[in-house]
Amino acid sequence: MHDKTILLIIGGGIAAYKTLELIRLLKKRGATVRAILTTGGAEFVTPLSVSTLAGDKTFTDLFDLDDEAKIGHIQLARDADLIVVAPATADLMAKMAVGLANDLATTCLLASNSPILIAPAMNPVMYEAKATKRNRTQLAEDGVHFAGPASGDMACGEEGEGRMLEPALILNKIDALLNQKKIEGPKSLLLSGHSDRPSELLLEGRHVLVTAGPTHEPIDPVRYIANHSSGKQGYAIAMAARDLGASVTLISGPTSLPVPDGIEMVRVETAEQMLSAAKTTLPADIAVCAAAVGDWRVAKNADHKIKKAGSKPPVLGLVENPDILKTLSQKGPKRPQLVIGFAAETQDLIANARKKLKAKGCDWIVANDVSASSGTFGGDRNQVTLIIDQEVEKWPSLDKQEVAQRLMVEAAGRLTNNKQAAE
Ligand code: C5P
Image (cartoon, rainbow, N blue to C red; front, top):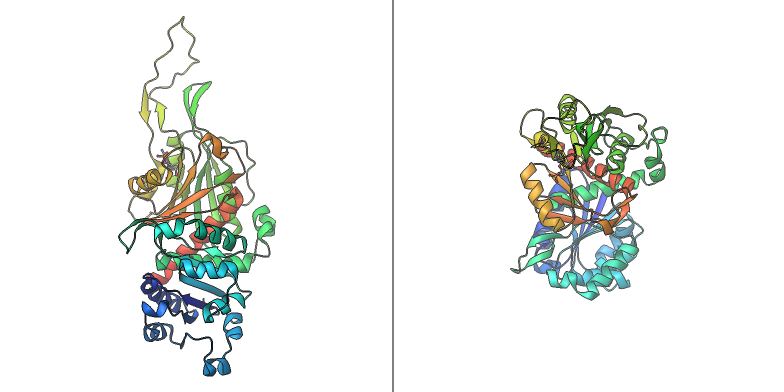
C-alpha cells in the first residue's frame, strides 16, 4: 500500500480503540494514513494517540484556519484513494445517507469521489432499527462498501449484530477494495475467460486447489448415491483464481460443465478418489472445498447390476466417507495457508456453519442457504455469508462468478496479510 492514501474517519463509539490497531496495520503496510477524529470519536481516543500512530496531524475541526490554509477539506477528501469510516456509528451513517455536511468528517465524505468503506459499530437494536436499516439500504445503493459488522458480545453487554469487524479483517477489505479498484475496468472480462486476464494478478505465483461438483458413490455398475450439485460455484472459484494469476487445480466430481481453459483439471467420481487427488495436489497456498461430497458410500458395491428380487429390496450397508476439508485443514507442513469450506444448510445457517468451522478446523466457511426457496442449487446466483472466527459477514445476493471473484480477492488479501505479519 506504499502508494496509497487512506482517509480514516473515526466516529464516536467504543470500538474507536480498535481503530488505533487498524492505523498501526495500515502504516505497517506502508499506507499514508490521514485521520479525522469526530467530536464523538475524541471522547474515546485522543488526537495524540491517533497522530502518534498515523505519524501525521489528526484533523478535527472544519473551520480550522490553519488547516484550511495548508490543506483544505476538499483536498483532504480528494487526496484519498479510499475513505474508511471506522467505527461508523448509527449517527454517522444517518448523516451519510441524507448527505449532511455539518462537520469535517461528513463534509469530506460528501466532497469525495473516492470509494468509501464503512465499518459499522453500534448496539444490535440500533443496528436493526428501521431507520438504520433504511440508511444501510440507501448507503449500499449509493455504492458505499461495508466491512461487517460482526455478531457477538457487545461492550454494552448485549449480544447480536453490531460489533465492529476486527482490524485485521477491515484491512482485508481495504486490500480487496484497493485491488478491486485496480481491476474494476476489466471486471466483466475478468469473469469471462482466460484470454482476457486482468493486469492485476493478485494470486500470481500461488497454487489454488478447488474441489467442486458432487461425488458419485457406486452401488453397482449402474447405480450410485449422489448429492445435488451443479459444480457452478466451485468452477467459478477456480476460474476467478486463474484470472487472478494463480495456477489452479480443479478436482471435480461428475458435472456437465465444460473444462475451463488454463486450469489443471482432475476428474474423479468418488469421495475417496477426490481425497487422494487432493493429497497429490498439495502443496497449495489456498484450498477451497466447494464439492458436495457424499457423506457415505456403500460398504461393498456389487460387481454386477443388482436385480430386483421379488418384493425384497436390497439392504445397503453404508460406511462414512473421508472428510476432504477436515483432512486438508489438519496441521502439518503441507497445510495450505488458507483453507476455505462451504456449509450448505437448510436451517440455522449461521449456527451450523460456525459449528462446521470448528469441527473441520478450516479458516473460513462460506455459508449458504440451500433450502428449496433459495434457488441456489443449479442456479446462477448465490447469497452467502462469510464466517471467519467470530466474524459473520453477510454478502448480498450475487452472481456465482461475483461471489467467486470476491472470495478470491479476499483470499489474496489474506495471503498478503499473512506475509506481512511474518516479515
Ligand atoms: O459436513 P458437510 O458436508 O456439511 O461440510 C461441507 C464442507 O465440507 C464443504 O466445504 C465440503 O466440500 C466439505 N466436505 C469434504 N469432504 C466430505 C464432506 C464435506 O470436503 N466428506
